Image (cartoon, rainbow, N blue to C red; front, side, top):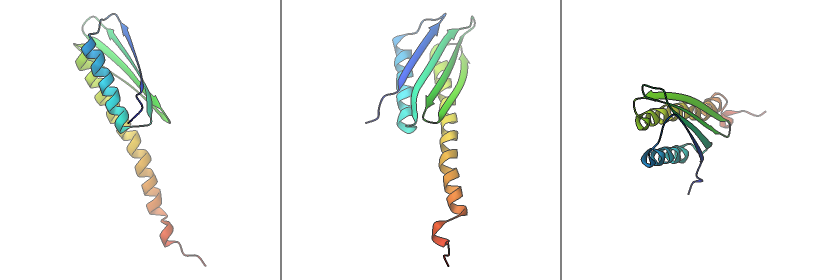
Length: 115
């Protein structure tokens, strides 16, 4: 069982339904299952007169991701935000893993000749 992340939601000039808040918590939980290094999400939802603007930040061990999304409703804006956060987390995560593999391939310990 994974430890649930800290999720902080700020709302400015807008009102959120319980279903949107639950969807945000569910998305955060899903991301933490895949990217265990993330420990905290900060989401800010604000009305901008035409629609909604959502800013998000995911932080954790050696991880700092920030992005934003805009849509006419808060739910779709939050979905776009989490898609962007997931892409950025995957990019950072893959760089960490594959850079270690590349360095190991360049200097494999099995092929070292000792004299």
